[in-house]
Image 1: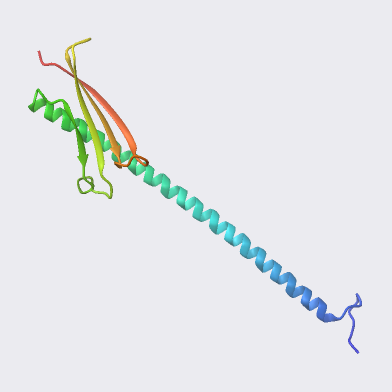
Image 2: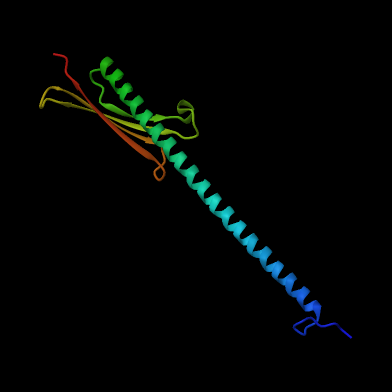
Length: 143
């Protein structure tokens, strides 16, 4: 004769029910752990993307500054200098990507005689993922 529990069912059903509940608890725990890991990875990827964008913004700023200094130096040594498109290699920038700086020289007489230097720096030199930084400076004519 099989002994019955207080509910009238054999004790084995209770053991099977406990194993089933343990299995469900383990699966729920694994699901929660997987969701937490996915959220952590998503946060990490977002942070890395922000760091990369900040790095590109900084590189674009310094590329614009270098192009401005390049234009000032060229203008000081060559009065006919009218600008250029400066392709900067990754090796020169010390990174994995190339940069591009467009330098425009615009003489003006109003409101005072001088020259506008306008620079547009793009880093990386990629039509989709680039950061653009613009600078301009007025250089009065030496009279």
